[in-house]
Amino acid sequence: MKSARPLHPRFIHGSDLVRATGAFLALIALAGCEQNTFVAPPPPKVDVALPLQRPITRYLEATGNTAPIKQVDLVARVQGFLQSIDYKDGDFVQQGTTLFTIEPETYRLKLDQARAAQAGAQASLKQAELDFQRQSDLVTRQAVSKATLETSTANRDNAQANLQQAQTNTRIAEVNYGYTKVTAPFDGIVSAHLVSVGELVGVSSPTQLATIVAPDPIYVNFTVNEQQVLRFRAEARRRRLTLADLKQTPVEVGLQIEEGFPHAGKLDYVAPTVNQSTGTLAVRGIIPNADRVLLPGLFVRVRVPTEKQENALLVPDTALGSDQSGRYLLVVTGENKVEQRKVTTGQIENGLRVIETGLKPEDRVVIAGLLRVIPGEKVDPQLQKIVEAQASAK
Image (cartoon, rainbow, N blue to C red; front, side, top):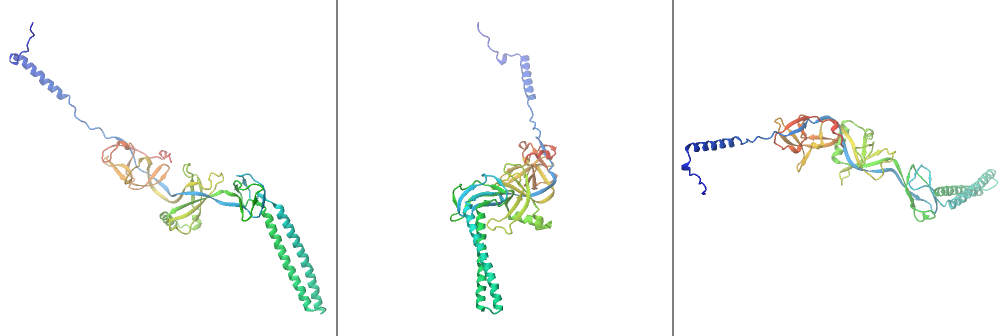
């Protein structure tokens, strides 16, 4: 059976053609209704806040190192064999404690010898004095010549000189005998001994035996640059501070592993001149160190308060960005557009960064959602408040 052929358009009935055309037009109309018009997304929401305003204390910050206020090398000042070591390495000892003993017997005998010579000189002087008095009486009665008196006078003067020499020798012997015991010159910690018992010391020059260091208090040495010196001196003149007042200036110190500056002391010394080669001024503070947390030779962070400022502007440190031109903040304008603002930053105050220049108290600073904003674009600002609780990290 042959398949039916499709009808040629000329054989389609007119009513069928009308129905097909209407269906085609309906499909076109339906397709037109399904097309969507583009709607821009709403501006991103970001947290903004006004800068926190409060008084702050400005600080001069530097890096320093600790040094003992007393440190002495203990040496053998007399020659002899080391008889004993009378302490344990690392002991804390009191002033006057015997630390080493150097062959005292020899020097005790020399002292006895000197004392005996002094006693003989005293006896000779006594005899010479009696002879002088006797000759003086005889000369008065013209029983002897003046030459005899002159001889007696010379003998007396010679005996006095011999006694003085003997007394000096005795004193030297006493001093040398005292040097046979090496004692602590002050309260401190004694290092490990550098010689052993039985070793000959002090042969040609003083032999170092150990070192003693006073741990409390402790010095902190640091330097400040010329600009900081000028600002500090200007503030001191404004406040009419005397040298005695400056020595009451607090000095705060913190170790590299510590938060903040937990160790407090006072300014102790300021060099009279600026080092021309480095343009810095040497400064020293003194810090109580009863718990011996600070060891001599440590690098420490140092800060010294210089002045107080009212109504400083502070923002969270996380709100700051940086590029090749420096630090900046993102600020929302009155039209809710984001503006990149170049700023000059100052010190950290309890986790908040002090803004020196480039920011006004009425500026709305983006403090969260920084990655969702683009300078020049609009945002939906959500006003927040900067509180000290946000400043927990130092």
